[in-house]
Length: 301
Image (cartoon, rainbow, N blue to C red; front, side, top):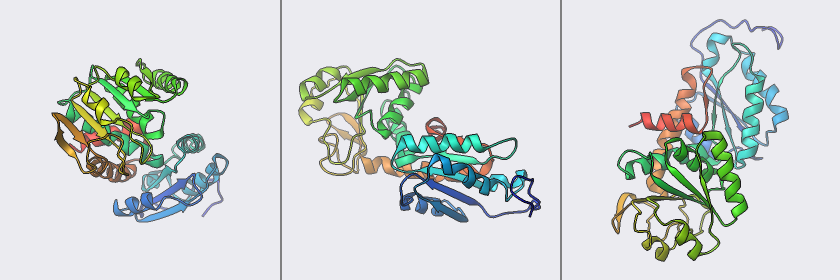
């Protein structure tokens, strides 16, 4: 083997698949590790507490042990509970690549991309196969999953309202997603039930993406929304985010509204996650962020 920085001399052959798991948390996610193993990864190398400054050398260790023709058998998974920090790791990883020396990457911190993709696919089904022009609201849209949900809805042509208790935070998310997608999102400050009910009038779709155990859409507010056609709750811990939904709902009928609970969405999320892991080893130049993960979900049918 030659020294790092020189071209490797390993001959091309049927090498084992290797997934390098870079996690921003001190202990790498066990959940993500189990999914990787179940998706068929041969070898999983897990690193916790990773900072952007450490990424280059970790990536170089993956790049310089295999020739360019074999690098599609190596891939990166970037996770952790802090989405912003995970995104910084993604930038550091892609900056370490050069020429043919690169590997595919899946970004899924806190399950944000795979969960959001599953939720938006359910929303599309709930609205009859198209989100274009649909009036949609994302509750707790400033969180990691909520931001991804709003971003994907905007990409699908929905008219998106992003809700938060703070007008400043809602406005910041609306601007950020608008700059990324070219869409115009409406910020909504909903500090109480009255403001929430007023801001959601006319909505056909509501997705709750808040913290565990927090009710975001009380039953009286929900019943006042005469245009509502579909609602999705991504919180599995009682009390649920949308009052009246059951956690196992999967296209259930609740008072004439098509509904999905967290576990009802979870099966699709798991299928997308596994498919994304396998997709990493189809080439050495894939970067799977929210939009790419959503496209994989669509392909599952």
